[in-house]
Image (cartoon, rainbow, N blue to C red; front, side, top):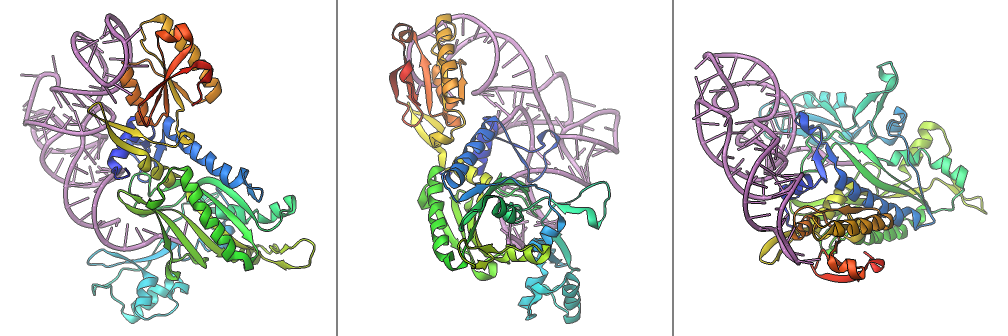
Length: 450
RNA sequence: GCGGGUGUCGUAUAACGGCUAUUAUCCCAGUUUUCCAAACUGGUGACGGGGGUUCGAUUCCCCCCACCCGCACCA
Protein backbone atom coordinates (compact mmCIF):
# COMPACT_ATOMS: atom_id res chain seq x y z
CA UNK A 1 0.00 0.00 0.00
CA UNK A 2 1.90 3.04 -1.06
CA UNK A 3 -1.25 4.92 -1.90
CA UNK A 4 -0.65 6.63 1.42
CA UNK A 5 -0.91 10.37 0.94
CA UNK A 6 1.86 12.71 1.94
CA UNK A 7 -0.45 14.29 4.51
CA UNK A 8 -0.99 10.94 6.23
CA UNK A 9 2.71 10.21 6.14
CA UNK A 10 3.71 13.66 7.39
CA UNK A 11 1.14 13.45 10.16
CA UNK A 12 2.39 10.07 11.35
CA UNK A 13 6.00 11.21 10.98
CA UNK A 14 5.36 14.16 13.26
CA UNK A 15 3.11 12.39 15.74
CA UNK A 16 5.56 9.58 16.25
CA UNK A 17 8.80 11.54 16.24
CA UNK A 18 10.23 10.83 12.81
CA UNK A 19 10.23 14.18 11.02
CA UNK A 20 9.31 17.73 12.05
CA UNK A 21 9.08 20.94 10.09
CA UNK A 22 12.37 22.86 10.31
CA UNK A 23 12.39 25.87 12.67
CA UNK A 24 8.78 25.07 13.45
CA UNK A 25 8.32 27.26 16.54
CA UNK A 26 9.22 30.30 14.41
CA UNK A 27 6.79 29.42 11.66
CA UNK A 28 9.15 27.16 9.77
CA UNK A 29 11.69 27.66 7.01
CA UNK A 30 10.72 26.49 3.56
CA UNK A 31 12.58 23.45 2.32
CA UNK A 32 14.01 22.36 5.65
CA UNK A 33 12.92 19.45 7.83
CA UNK A 34 14.31 18.12 11.06
CA UNK A 35 14.62 14.44 11.87
CA UNK A 36 13.43 13.38 15.30
CA UNK A 37 14.61 10.41 17.37
CA UNK A 38 12.84 7.77 15.28
CA UNK A 39 13.60 9.49 11.99
CA UNK A 40 17.30 9.77 12.60
CA UNK A 41 17.42 6.10 13.59
CA UNK A 42 15.73 5.09 10.37
CA UNK A 43 17.91 7.40 8.34
CA UNK A 44 21.11 6.12 9.88
CA UNK A 45 20.02 2.53 9.38
CA UNK A 46 19.46 3.21 5.69
CA UNK A 47 22.76 5.02 5.39
CA UNK A 48 24.63 2.23 7.13
CA UNK A 49 23.02 -0.41 4.94
CA UNK A 50 24.13 1.59 1.91
CA UNK A 51 27.67 1.91 3.20
CA UNK A 52 27.79 -1.81 3.91
CA UNK A 53 26.59 -2.75 0.43
CA UNK A 54 28.67 -0.33 -1.57
CA UNK A 55 31.79 0.18 0.54
CA UNK A 56 32.35 -2.50 3.18
CA UNK A 57 31.16 -5.44 1.12
CA UNK A 58 33.23 -4.45 -1.91
CA UNK A 59 36.98 -4.39 -2.19
CA UNK A 60 37.07 -1.78 -4.95
CA UNK A 61 35.19 1.12 -3.35
CA UNK A 62 36.68 3.38 -0.69
CA UNK A 63 34.88 5.82 1.53
CA UNK A 64 35.73 9.47 1.98
CA UNK A 65 34.17 12.35 3.84
CA UNK A 66 35.08 15.68 2.28
CA UNK A 67 34.49 19.30 3.20
CA UNK A 68 31.25 21.05 2.34
CA UNK A 69 33.10 24.30 1.68
CA UNK A 70 35.48 24.16 -1.24
CA UNK A 71 37.74 26.51 -3.12
CA UNK A 72 35.53 28.45 -5.54
CA UNK A 73 37.70 27.28 -8.42
CA UNK A 74 36.28 23.80 -7.93
CA UNK A 75 32.86 25.06 -8.99
CA UNK A 76 34.24 26.91 -11.97
CA UNK A 77 36.02 23.77 -13.13
CA UNK A 78 32.95 21.61 -12.59
CA UNK A 79 30.73 23.99 -14.51
CA UNK A 80 28.43 24.71 -11.58
CA UNK A 81 28.82 28.45 -11.76
CA UNK A 82 27.70 28.38 -15.40
CA UNK A 83 24.53 27.26 -17.12
CA UNK A 84 22.77 24.44 -15.38
CA UNK A 85 23.12 25.47 -11.80
CA UNK A 86 23.05 29.17 -12.45
CA UNK A 87 19.99 29.44 -14.66
CA UNK A 88 19.29 32.55 -16.69
CA UNK A 89 15.59 33.32 -16.33
CA UNK A 90 13.36 35.86 -18.00
CA UNK A 91 9.88 36.81 -16.96
CA UNK A 92 6.88 37.53 -19.16
CA UNK A 93 6.00 41.00 -17.91
CA UNK A 94 2.30 40.42 -18.46
CA UNK A 95 1.65 36.82 -17.41
CA UNK A 96 4.54 36.76 -14.90
CA UNK A 97 5.50 33.32 -16.19
CA UNK A 98 9.17 32.52 -16.18
CA UNK A 99 11.29 30.94 -18.86
CA UNK A 100 14.87 29.85 -19.29
CA UNK A 101 16.42 32.55 -21.45
CA UNK A 102 18.65 30.10 -23.32
CA UNK A 103 15.74 27.76 -24.06
CA UNK A 104 13.69 30.66 -25.39
CA UNK A 105 16.52 31.77 -27.64
CA UNK A 106 16.98 28.32 -29.09
CA UNK A 107 13.26 28.02 -29.72
CA UNK A 108 13.58 31.25 -31.67
CA UNK A 109 16.26 29.75 -33.90
CA UNK A 110 19.31 31.18 -32.14
CA UNK A 111 21.99 28.51 -32.08
CA UNK A 112 24.33 27.79 -29.16
CA UNK A 113 22.41 30.02 -26.81
CA UNK A 114 23.61 27.90 -23.93
CA UNK A 115 27.17 28.97 -24.59
CA UNK A 116 26.32 32.68 -24.43
CA UNK A 117 27.00 34.89 -21.48
CA UNK A 118 23.93 36.23 -19.77
CA UNK A 119 24.63 39.68 -21.16
CA UNK A 120 24.77 38.29 -24.66
CA UNK A 121 21.44 36.57 -24.07
CA UNK A 122 19.85 39.78 -22.85
CA UNK A 123 21.29 41.70 -25.79
CA UNK A 124 20.05 39.13 -28.31
CA UNK A 125 16.56 39.22 -26.81
CA UNK A 126 16.50 43.00 -27.14
CA UNK A 127 18.00 43.10 -30.65
CA UNK A 128 15.82 40.39 -32.14
CA UNK A 129 12.75 41.65 -30.30
CA UNK A 130 12.07 38.20 -28.89
CA UNK A 131 8.76 37.90 -27.08
CA UNK A 132 7.42 35.37 -24.63
CA UNK A 133 5.44 32.37 -25.98
CA UNK A 134 2.32 34.40 -25.17
CA UNK A 135 3.62 37.29 -27.26
CA UNK A 136 4.47 39.66 -24.42
CA UNK A 137 7.48 41.75 -23.50
CA UNK A 138 10.17 40.05 -21.45
CA UNK A 139 12.08 41.23 -18.42
CA UNK A 140 15.86 41.40 -18.30
CA UNK A 141 17.78 38.18 -17.88
CA UNK A 142 18.07 37.39 -14.21
CA UNK A 143 20.44 34.75 -12.97
CA UNK A 144 19.10 32.29 -10.50
CA UNK A 145 21.94 30.36 -8.90
CA UNK A 146 20.94 27.08 -7.33
CA UNK A 147 24.02 27.14 -5.09
CA UNK A 148 23.99 28.83 -1.70
CA UNK A 149 26.70 31.44 -1.60
CA UNK A 150 28.79 32.23 1.41
CA UNK A 151 32.06 33.90 2.24
CA UNK A 152 35.05 32.31 3.85
CA UNK A 153 37.00 34.40 6.31
CA UNK A 154 36.44 37.97 7.49
CA UNK A 155 36.51 39.70 4.11
CA UNK A 156 33.35 39.70 2.04
CA UNK A 157 34.44 40.03 -1.56
CA UNK A 158 34.75 38.03 -4.77
CA UNK A 159 37.93 36.28 -3.68
CA UNK A 160 36.42 35.02 -0.41
CA UNK A 161 33.28 33.74 -2.11
CA UNK A 162 32.44 30.10 -1.73
CA UNK A 163 29.41 27.88 -1.96
CA UNK A 164 27.73 25.20 0.05
CA UNK A 165 28.24 22.14 -2.10
CA UNK A 166 25.26 21.10 -4.24
CA UNK A 167 26.64 17.57 -4.70
CA UNK A 168 29.26 15.34 -3.11
CA UNK A 169 30.90 14.41 -6.38
CA UNK A 170 33.44 17.22 -6.54
CA UNK A 171 34.83 16.33 -3.13
CA UNK A 172 35.68 12.94 -4.55
CA UNK A 173 37.11 14.24 -7.82
CA UNK A 174 39.46 16.64 -6.10
CA UNK A 175 40.68 13.78 -3.90
CA UNK A 176 41.05 11.26 -6.71
CA UNK A 177 44.76 12.03 -6.99
CA UNK A 178 45.30 11.80 -3.22
CA UNK A 179 43.73 8.37 -3.10
CA UNK A 180 45.64 7.08 -6.13
CA UNK A 181 48.89 8.27 -4.54
CA UNK A 182 48.19 6.85 -1.09
CA UNK A 183 46.31 3.60 -1.73
CA UNK A 184 47.45 2.73 -5.26
CA UNK A 185 44.11 1.11 -6.13
CA UNK A 186 43.71 -0.93 -9.30
CA UNK A 187 41.30 0.33 -11.90
CA UNK A 188 38.35 0.19 -11.76
CA UNK A 189 37.86 1.62 -8.29
CA UNK A 190 35.39 3.91 -6.62
CA UNK A 191 35.21 6.68 -4.06
CA UNK A 192 32.04 6.81 -2.01
CA UNK A 193 30.54 9.46 0.20
CA UNK A 194 27.36 10.19 2.07
CA UNK A 195 26.82 13.77 3.07
CA UNK A 196 24.79 16.92 3.20
CA UNK A 197 24.28 18.97 0.10
CA UNK A 198 22.49 22.26 -0.42
CA UNK A 199 20.41 23.52 -3.31
CA UNK A 200 18.48 26.73 -3.32
CA UNK A 201 15.40 25.24 -4.93
CA UNK A 202 12.93 27.71 -6.39
CA UNK A 203 10.03 25.92 -4.85
CA UNK A 204 10.47 23.19 -2.25
CA UNK A 205 7.53 20.83 -2.37
CA UNK A 206 6.14 17.49 -1.35
CA UNK A 207 7.23 17.04 2.27
CA UNK A 208 10.86 15.87 2.36
CA UNK A 209 10.94 15.15 -1.36
CA UNK A 210 12.09 18.51 -2.69
CA UNK A 211 14.09 20.37 -0.08
CA UNK A 212 16.92 22.85 0.17
CA UNK A 213 19.23 20.82 2.37
CA UNK A 214 19.48 17.07 2.10
CA UNK A 215 21.71 14.04 2.13
CA UNK A 216 23.10 12.31 -0.93
CA UNK A 217 24.85 8.99 -0.95
CA UNK A 218 26.92 8.64 -4.07
CA UNK A 219 30.03 7.10 -5.46
CA UNK A 220 32.33 7.85 -8.35
CA UNK A 221 33.46 4.72 -10.10
CA UNK A 222 36.66 5.29 -12.08
CA UNK A 223 36.98 3.06 -15.13
CA UNK A 224 38.82 2.44 -18.35
CA UNK A 225 36.62 4.20 -20.94
CA UNK A 226 36.45 1.11 -23.12
CA UNK A 227 34.58 -0.74 -20.37
CA UNK A 228 31.91 1.84 -19.70
CA UNK A 229 28.96 -0.06 -21.07
CA UNK A 230 29.79 -3.21 -19.09
CA UNK A 231 30.36 -1.30 -15.87
CA UNK A 232 27.27 0.81 -16.38
CA UNK A 233 25.18 -2.34 -16.71
CA UNK A 234 26.66 -3.86 -13.53
CA UNK A 235 25.96 -0.74 -11.48
CA UNK A 236 22.53 -0.46 -13.01
CA UNK A 237 21.65 -4.00 -11.93
CA UNK A 238 22.96 -3.41 -8.45
CA UNK A 239 20.51 -0.58 -7.98
CA UNK A 240 17.76 -3.17 -7.64
CA UNK A 241 19.68 -5.13 -5.03
CA UNK A 242 19.73 -1.89 -3.11
CA UNK A 243 16.01 -1.13 -3.42
CA UNK A 244 15.38 -4.71 -2.23
CA UNK A 245 17.17 -3.80 0.99
CA UNK A 246 14.73 -0.92 1.42
CA UNK A 247 11.86 -3.31 0.84
CA UNK A 248 10.69 -1.41 -2.23
CA UNK A 249 8.43 -3.24 -4.63
CA UNK A 250 10.35 -3.61 -7.89
CA UNK A 251 7.12 -3.05 -9.79
CA UNK A 252 7.05 0.48 -8.39
CA UNK A 253 10.53 1.33 -9.65
CA UNK A 254 10.61 2.92 -13.07
CA UNK A 255 13.60 3.72 -15.19
CA UNK A 256 13.83 6.87 -17.19
CA UNK A 257 16.45 6.95 -19.90
CA UNK A 258 17.26 10.64 -19.82
CA UNK A 259 17.37 11.99 -23.38
CA UNK A 260 20.48 13.87 -24.50
CA UNK A 261 18.87 17.31 -24.38
CA UNK A 262 17.82 16.85 -20.75
CA UNK A 263 21.07 15.38 -19.52
CA UNK A 264 23.53 17.28 -17.44
CA UNK A 265 26.28 19.04 -19.33
CA UNK A 266 28.77 16.33 -18.45
CA UNK A 267 26.81 13.17 -19.06
CA UNK A 268 26.83 10.78 -21.96
CA UNK A 269 24.20 8.49 -20.54
CA UNK A 270 21.90 8.86 -17.53
CA UNK A 271 19.20 6.65 -16.15
CA UNK A 272 16.91 8.09 -13.51
CA UNK A 273 15.34 5.62 -11.13
CA UNK A 274 11.87 6.66 -10.11
CA UNK A 275 9.54 5.39 -7.46
CA UNK A 276 5.76 5.38 -7.80
CA UNK A 277 4.80 7.64 -4.88
CA UNK A 278 1.17 8.42 -4.24
CA UNK A 279 1.86 11.98 -5.43
CA UNK A 280 3.54 10.85 -8.63
CA UNK A 281 6.39 8.81 -10.02
CA UNK A 282 9.49 10.67 -8.97
CA UNK A 283 13.25 10.33 -9.05
CA UNK A 284 14.93 8.72 -6.04
CA UNK A 285 18.29 7.96 -7.61
CA UNK A 286 20.24 7.92 -10.83
CA UNK A 287 23.22 6.48 -12.62
CA UNK A 288 25.18 8.88 -14.78
CA UNK A 289 28.08 8.21 -17.07
CA UNK A 290 30.07 11.41 -16.56
CA UNK A 291 32.87 10.48 -18.99
CA UNK A 292 36.18 12.17 -18.13
CA UNK A 293 34.45 15.54 -17.91
CA UNK A 294 35.26 16.20 -14.27
CA UNK A 295 38.80 14.91 -14.04
CA UNK A 296 39.77 16.54 -17.34
CA UNK A 297 38.39 19.87 -16.26
CA UNK A 298 40.12 19.68 -12.91
CA UNK A 299 43.35 18.84 -14.70
CA UNK A 300 42.86 21.82 -16.97
CA UNK A 301 42.00 24.24 -14.17
CA UNK A 302 44.37 23.01 -11.47
CA UNK A 303 47.27 21.88 -13.62
CA UNK A 304 47.43 18.59 -11.73
CA UNK A 305 47.92 15.54 -13.91
CA UNK A 306 44.90 13.28 -13.52
CA UNK A 307 46.16 10.45 -15.69
CA UNK A 308 46.12 6.94 -14.32
CA UNK A 309 48.99 4.65 -15.27
CA UNK A 310 47.97 1.04 -15.75
CA UNK A 311 50.25 -1.09 -13.60
CA UNK A 312 52.83 -3.11 -15.47
CA UNK A 313 52.48 -1.07 -18.63
CA UNK A 314 53.01 2.41 -19.89
CA UNK A 315 49.39 2.86 -20.75
CA UNK A 316 48.08 6.13 -19.36
CA UNK A 317 44.74 7.86 -19.57
CA UNK A 318 42.33 9.96 -17.62
CA UNK A 319 39.78 7.52 -16.19
CA UNK A 320 36.13 7.88 -17.04
CA UNK A 321 33.51 7.95 -14.33
CA UNK A 322 30.17 6.32 -13.70
CA UNK A 323 28.27 7.82 -10.82
CA UNK A 324 25.39 6.14 -9.00
CA UNK A 325 23.54 8.68 -6.85
CA UNK A 326 21.09 7.84 -4.09
CA UNK A 327 18.98 10.50 -2.44
CA UNK A 328 18.95 9.42 1.19
CA UNK A 329 15.92 11.46 2.21
CA UNK A 330 14.01 10.44 -0.89
CA UNK A 331 14.87 6.80 -0.32
CA UNK A 332 13.66 7.18 3.25
CA UNK A 333 10.41 8.67 1.99
CA UNK A 334 10.00 5.79 -0.47
CA UNK A 335 10.76 3.31 2.30
CA UNK A 336 8.13 4.88 4.54
CA UNK A 337 5.58 5.02 1.72
CA UNK A 338 6.15 1.38 0.89
CA UNK A 339 6.05 0.32 4.53
CA UNK A 340 2.86 2.20 5.43
CA UNK A 341 0.22 -0.48 5.69
CA UNK A 342 -3.40 -0.40 6.75
CA UNK A 343 -5.24 -3.58 7.68
CA UNK A 344 -7.99 -4.67 9.98
CA UNK A 345 -7.53 -6.30 13.35
CA UNK A 346 -10.49 -7.34 15.49
CA UNK A 347 -12.73 -5.13 13.43
CA UNK A 348 -10.56 -2.06 13.93
CA UNK A 349 -8.36 -0.23 11.49
CA UNK A 350 -4.69 -0.83 12.18
CA UNK A 351 -1.87 1.26 10.73
CA UNK A 352 1.60 -0.18 10.78
CA UNK A 353 4.97 0.32 9.16
CA UNK A 354 6.09 -2.88 7.51
CA UNK A 355 9.72 -1.82 7.56
CA UNK A 356 12.48 -4.31 6.82
CA UNK A 357 13.72 -5.51 10.20
CA UNK A 358 17.23 -4.23 9.64
CA UNK A 359 15.92 -0.71 9.09
CA UNK A 360 13.39 -0.50 11.90
CA UNK A 361 14.28 2.31 14.34
CA UNK A 362 13.30 0.14 17.29
CA UNK A 363 14.06 -3.57 17.12
CA UNK A 364 11.90 -4.68 20.01
CA UNK A 365 9.67 -3.31 22.71
CA UNK A 366 9.58 -4.86 26.17
CA UNK A 367 6.62 -4.51 28.54
CA UNK A 368 5.29 -6.04 31.71
CA UNK A 369 1.78 -7.32 31.13
CA UNK A 370 0.59 -5.26 34.08
CA UNK A 371 2.44 -2.31 35.43
CA UNK A 372 0.98 -2.39 38.93
CA UNK A 373 2.48 -5.79 39.69
CA UNK A 374 6.03 -5.08 40.94
CA UNK A 375 7.24 -8.63 40.32
CA UNK A 376 6.29 -8.38 36.65
CA UNK A 377 7.89 -4.96 36.27
CA UNK A 378 11.09 -6.16 37.90
CA UNK A 379 11.35 -9.18 35.64
CA UNK A 380 10.53 -7.11 32.56
CA UNK A 381 13.27 -4.64 33.47
CA UNK A 382 15.77 -7.49 33.56
CA UNK A 383 14.73 -8.68 30.12
CA UNK A 384 14.82 -5.13 28.84
CA UNK A 385 18.37 -4.56 30.06
CA UNK A 386 19.51 -7.87 28.64
CA UNK A 387 17.99 -7.17 25.20
CA UNK A 388 19.28 -3.64 25.14
CA UNK A 389 22.81 -4.97 25.43
CA UNK A 390 22.12 -7.47 22.69
CA UNK A 391 20.14 -5.36 20.23
CA UNK A 392 20.76 -1.76 21.15
CA UNK A 393 17.55 -0.16 19.93
CA UNK A 394 15.03 -1.55 22.40
CA UNK A 395 12.14 0.40 23.86
CA UNK A 396 10.39 0.14 27.22
CA UNK A 397 6.64 0.68 27.36
CA UNK A 398 4.34 0.09 30.32
CA UNK A 399 1.71 2.63 29.41
CA UNK A 400 -1.99 1.82 29.16
CA UNK A 401 -2.95 -1.71 28.30
CA UNK A 402 -1.11 -4.24 26.25
CA UNK A 403 -3.15 -3.77 23.06
CA UNK A 404 -2.45 -0.08 23.09
CA UNK A 405 1.26 -0.69 23.36
CA UNK A 406 1.17 -3.07 20.44
CA UNK A 407 -0.60 -0.53 18.28
CA UNK A 408 1.82 2.16 19.23
CA UNK A 409 4.76 0.00 18.27
CA UNK A 410 3.00 -0.93 15.03
CA UNK A 411 2.97 2.69 14.00
CA UNK A 412 6.72 3.04 14.36
CA UNK A 413 7.43 -0.28 12.71
CA UNK A 414 8.86 -2.21 15.65
CA UNK A 415 9.10 -5.82 14.44
CA UNK A 416 8.56 -7.50 17.81
CA UNK A 417 6.94 -6.81 21.15
CA UNK A 418 7.99 -8.87 24.14
CA UNK A 419 5.62 -9.23 27.05
CA UNK A 420 6.46 -10.50 30.50
CA UNK A 421 3.55 -12.19 32.30
CA UNK A 422 3.02 -14.39 35.36
CA UNK A 423 4.11 -17.49 33.51
CA UNK A 424 7.46 -15.81 32.87
CA UNK A 425 8.07 -15.81 36.62
CA UNK A 426 7.58 -19.56 36.67
CA UNK A 427 9.31 -20.83 33.55
CA UNK A 428 11.30 -17.92 32.07
CA UNK A 429 9.31 -17.76 28.87
CA UNK A 430 7.83 -14.64 27.32
CA UNK A 431 5.41 -13.90 24.51
CA UNK A 432 6.91 -12.49 21.35
CA UNK A 433 4.36 -10.74 19.21
CA UNK A 434 5.00 -10.24 15.52
CA UNK A 435 4.24 -6.87 13.94
CA UNK A 436 3.09 -8.10 10.54
CA UNK A 437 0.94 -11.05 11.56
CA UNK A 438 -0.04 -9.87 15.07
CA UNK A 439 0.57 -13.49 16.12
CA UNK A 440 2.20 -14.37 19.43
CA UNK A 441 4.66 -17.06 20.31
CA UNK A 442 5.87 -18.32 23.65
CA UNK A 443 9.67 -18.24 23.71
CA UNK A 444 12.26 -18.93 26.40
CA UNK A 445 14.08 -15.75 27.40
CA UNK A 446 17.47 -17.06 26.37
CA UNK A 447 16.10 -17.91 22.93
CA UNK A 448 14.68 -14.50 22.14
CA UNK A 449 16.08 -13.82 18.72
CA UNK A 450 14.43 -10.90 17.06
C1' G B 1 9.06 33.56 -8.14
C1' C B 2 3.71 34.17 -10.04
C1' G B 3 -1.82 32.97 -9.47
C1' G B 4 -5.50 30.64 -6.24
C1' G B 5 -6.54 28.46 -1.44
C1' U B 6 -5.52 27.33 3.77
C1' G B 7 -3.59 28.38 8.85
C1' U B 8 -7.47 26.97 16.24
C1' C B 9 -4.08 22.04 21.77
C1' G B 10 0.70 16.66 19.38
C1' U B 11 -3.36 14.87 15.74
C1' A B 12 -8.32 15.67 13.82
C1' U B 13 -11.90 19.44 14.59
C1' A B 14 -16.26 23.38 16.51
C1' A B 15 -17.84 28.19 17.44
C1' C B 16 -17.53 33.39 18.22
C1' G B 17 -16.35 41.35 17.35
C1' G B 18 -17.24 40.46 24.30
C1' C B 19 -18.23 35.06 30.08
C1' U B 20 -12.66 30.46 31.76
C1' A B 21 -12.43 29.08 23.14
C1' U B 22 -15.78 23.24 21.79
C1' U B 23 -15.35 18.07 21.08
C1' A B 24 -12.74 13.58 20.14
C1' U B 25 -8.22 11.33 20.23
C1' C B 26 -3.27 11.40 21.82
C1' C B 27 -0.27 12.51 26.06
C1' C B 28 0.62 12.67 31.73
C1' A B 29 -0.88 10.91 36.94
C1' G B 30 -3.93 7.38 39.41
C1' U B 31 -7.76 3.27 40.05
C1' U B 32 -8.66 -1.06 37.42
C1' U B 33 -7.11 -4.70 33.96
C1' U B 34 -3.78 -12.07 33.12
C1' C B 35 -2.27 -10.43 25.77
C1' C B 36 -4.47 -6.49 20.77
C1' A B 37 -6.37 1.23 20.99
C1' A B 38 -11.86 -1.52 27.47
C1' A B 39 -13.76 1.53 31.69
C1' C B 40 -13.46 5.34 35.50
C1' U B 41 -11.17 9.86 38.00
C1' G B 42 -8.02 13.94 37.59
C1' G B 43 -4.49 16.87 34.65
C1' U B 44 -1.18 19.47 30.79
C1' G B 45 -1.90 21.46 26.12
C1' A B 46 -4.05 25.81 20.72
C1' C B 47 -6.30 30.79 17.87
C1' G B 48 1.23 30.80 12.78
C1' G B 49 3.97 35.91 13.61
C1' G B 50 3.74 41.31 13.46
C1' G B 51 0.99 45.73 12.76
C1' G B 52 -3.78 48.31 12.17
C1' U B 53 -9.26 49.40 12.95
C1' U B 54 -12.10 49.00 17.66
C1' C B 55 -13.89 50.33 24.35
C1' G B 56 -12.64 45.21 23.09
C1' A B 57 -9.83 41.13 17.51
C1' U B 58 -8.91 34.16 17.26
C1' U B 59 -12.97 36.60 14.30
C1' C B 60 -12.44 42.55 10.11
C1' C B 61 -8.06 44.93 7.23
C1' C B 62 -2.64 45.05 5.85
C1' C B 63 2.29 42.88 5.87
C1' C B 64 5.30 38.60 6.85
C1' C B 65 5.90 33.21 7.53
C1' A B 66 4.50 28.25 6.51
C1' C B 67 1.58 24.59 4.08
C1' C B 68 -1.73 22.83 -0.16
C1' C B 69 -3.14 23.17 -5.63
C1' G B 70 -1.64 25.08 -10.48
C1' C B 71 2.38 27.51 -13.54
C1' A B 72 7.53 27.91 -14.15
C1' C B 73 12.16 25.59 -12.55
C1' C B 74 14.50 20.87 -11.23
C1' A B 75 22.27 20.46 -12.56
